[in-house]
Image (cartoon, rainbow, N blue to C red; front, side, top):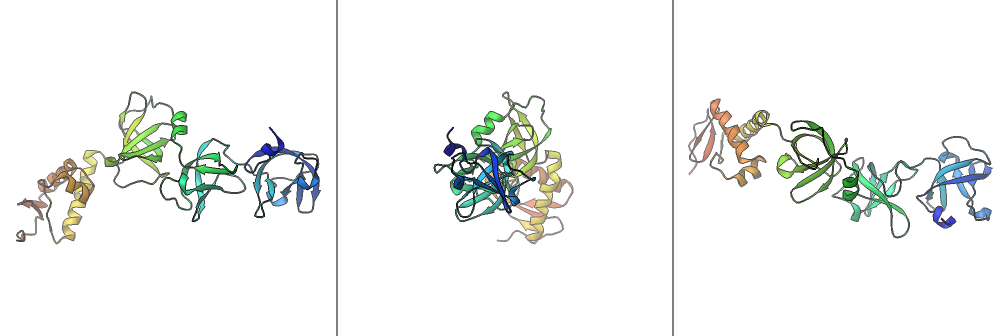
Length: 294
């Protein structure tokens, strides 16, 4: 590896301290020219250094474009994937904390949806065409290679994972145990953000060890919240609504974000408890006797 290649911004290199000054130490760039020596400022030192010490340092460009060193090393290496915190966003992209002295740039082209400051997202560290280190949220291939099959998991178990990709039908999560889990859009009460971490219930274990999961409660548990949702809407609508067990699944999904089967179970519970009644395609609170408007 040539000196120029080894001393690129974003690299970690082992360099010798050749001289010191009141504001820091200078590291030998190996060119034979002292004007090429690299500054390791005292603010970037994790412990006191002396001439002759060989130090592992992270190289980056200071605001004036000069190659500078820091003993604060990144927690990722080129090609590696990890969850990292978004430091801030700009009109061109965002900066992500990989544990180094400076945040690493993530261009908009490498984002999966909008990201916000302090969010944690899956990223891969790479070197862009100009030779600078950058990150991207396109991590599918790397996580697939890093994943392990879920052999000791059974239906009903709870797992914790974070979203790393979306498709037209749902989201893919990577769990703390390195499992791949698929969350169908019908199994999430609200759309999750890429990077968001959730706890979900296993609904199916595939032969290849990948999982299907759900954020919805079990049928017996869900009837309560679903029924409450129906009662809330009825109260908001003066005790009546144009939805019943005759309403189409599409309308039910759009209005309540639950399946037709779940809607009917909740209606059945409310009917059994004497809280509602249905007439001519409408549902009414039981203590309200208004006729359907004409």
